[in-house]
Image (cartoon, rainbow, N blue to C red; front, side):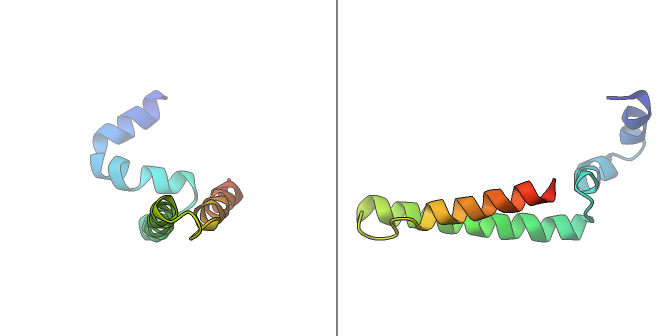
Amino acid sequence: MSDASHTSSRKNPLASLFLDHPATVDETYFQHMRFAFGFAFWLGTAALAALVHAIVPALCETTASRILKRLHARIESRH
């Protein structure tokens, strides 16, 4: 970590908590929040599908893996 970025973090800790990371992916705080909420929703959906599949193997056979592949592609396309 450079001295300049370390000093700016000490000057404004709220910026460090809420703005620094979204800026690394060229997003505002709210754009990043929207992306993260959407990602969390689909991770939860994949988890639920995996749980259903664990109980009844004939159901949701590929649902979780398809969702995870799509999420992975979304992450990769951001970089």
